[in-house]
Length: 75
Image (cartoon, rainbow, N blue to C red; front, side, top):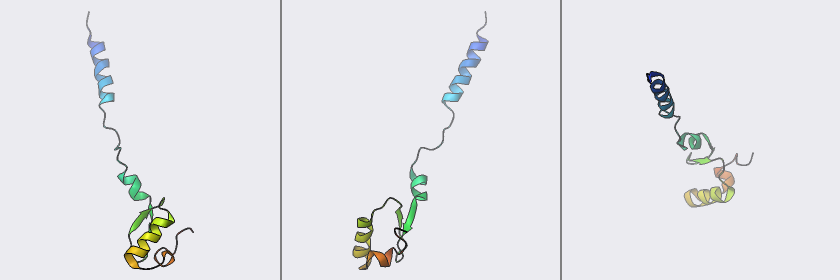
């Protein structure tokens, strides 16, 4: 009355549970989504960044207009 098959099945189930899964980090995805680049300082911004934030960056950091710092924004 051996339980060898049951023990092997349990080991296989536990191996599936403990298998290394892909990283759940959002960092790689966020890095890939940075497609807006300031023409003056080359700082990257996420693609979801809105115009007011870009205007604030260009005014505060460079004392320029948004069109001068981000010529490709909205195209």
